[in-house]
Image 1 (cartoon, rainbow, N blue to C red):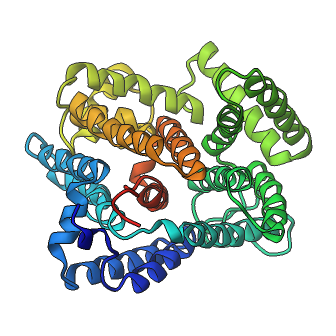
Image 2 (cartoon, rainbow, N blue to C red):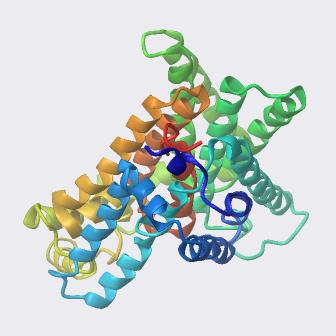
Length: 405
């Protein structure tokens, strides 16, 4: 790579300030996150150095895979009957065409601590608000309700944010050279964030939290060390039982989930939350079986699902989203679409393997594993918050540090 291309882009100092600001605002406000991202992209577009910018994108397998993932959604409009819905889906996927590739050309290894710090401060603000509502010091507002005190975003998104934040903080303790003050601060923040995981109601995020515990121990001790399995098998159930018997919100959510599953097995009750999700999986699978290679098109899932629902489960609720990202993409774009998503994860994971920085190598792999699981529990790439989460951290965990400082 020519030496000139290995240097930061012009206005790098401004870019870094904006990316750090983005880490703070996007967990708190979609609108603010969009504004900051829009400013970053606008500056990127009007400041020249186009050969250098597109060269950096062309050399990034993750960036190219991201663009291809978007383009497959675009071409999926060709065999779509419901163009209006297809354009709505395409808009949600636009981050993979615009924001992700652009940020991959801008992030810098020497600013990673600042990216993580700004994000952590935002999560701290969100968690403090949740505590204040939960303890009754302030009334629920915005998206918060009394038994689900999450004010900054949906509880469905909030707990995955918590799980990722806790994971990155633990890795910072394990693999970064930190001052004593920062170590003590992180040591306090981890249980502080962890408790919030259980008095809020995001079941997917709670499952993600327990998976994260296993990932941390396996990464630290290695696959062949018995401690990698003994410690999490002792710790995870202990945390679960402690939360269940001491936090009413969590106890209720667990009891409702067990009751829903039992009712579905014994009575085929499709009206409960669990019953609906199982029905969504069943009917979406029927759509996929009929259209395995290229799917029904980017915008035709709602209509295709409605037909299967009417035929097989007419008493069940309709949906425009099976609450599983893989099933949604498989039904819309077939094997081609699912492969285009998995290849992004593959190149991201391989990028982490190349990193000589222990924090980046461990965190990158764990982040991808957490996201792979997340997308099986909910269609998180349709949500602005969780898509921002993926794009923001992927842009600096999986970039090519051999080519950019």
